[in-house]
Image (tube, rainbow, N blue to C red; front, side, top):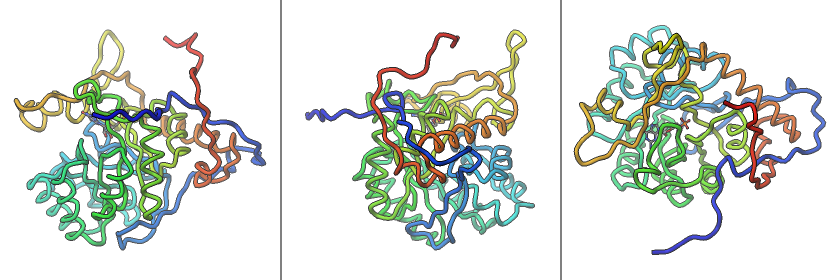
Length: 347
Ligand code: 5GP
């Protein structure tokens, strides 16, 4: 046993220090980024690097249709059938493929399923290989195999939280590494297993490792406010993935339910008992559920939430004098704090 004593921080432990700025208005800030990827031969990507999580209550076709119009990205959940994919993509523009990824686990059936979907829809450009624990040898082997099979695709792989594993995934063929173990809004991994890593430190360490090799990272999980999204970018994340913040909308999956006259949408972790009942015929005996099921108050159309997040992010950039999102990390100085917002009027 060993104890690491240097402090690891989460979003709640810091704020961004304001700096002198020559920007007159938030409208002068550009949130678009251009990326060239490490392995993929696909052309450069341009967009606003915020992503909807590949959860079946968030990463839906309906969500992708709206987010892509704003140049935001959706990792589509892995439970759509080939037929559903084909129908969905029937009228898709070429540009639309820049804003969606197909997701897969590391099982044989998963690999066979995405092979069929990609064969039928060769314009699909992004593949997201997603497992709860990105430290397994089997996962790395699967990633290598996927890279060999799809040399031109942009491969997202995760999740991990440390620099050395970020490097290993990039060297094994990932273009973008997904970072986050345990911070998610409906995640109970830290409670069930004791395993995790405060998200801000995970971003700082993994971004450093990835950027050294020419790779990119996604901060996945733990954002509860537009301010957290800004902190994730400030810490060095290239993309920020959101689950809970995009749940509960018209475009989110799940039933709209009414309880005592108020509207809610169900939202659950992808390894919650709810998800496993739905997709895997129940929780297998050898495992525990590592996700929660919650009712989120219905928030209407997602576009309003998106504009609120983008407005917050533009404002962050003006506070530190970054005219482009690209400059935000360079201009970020975090201060360690022991307070966040004033809660006096928070229910
Ligand atoms: P959020 O933005 O809601 O805080 O976090 C979203 C992320 O939580 C997802 O992208 C995924 O990485 C993670 N997640 C989703 N479902 C589960 C689950 O059931 N268990 C765990 N441990 N993490 C989950």
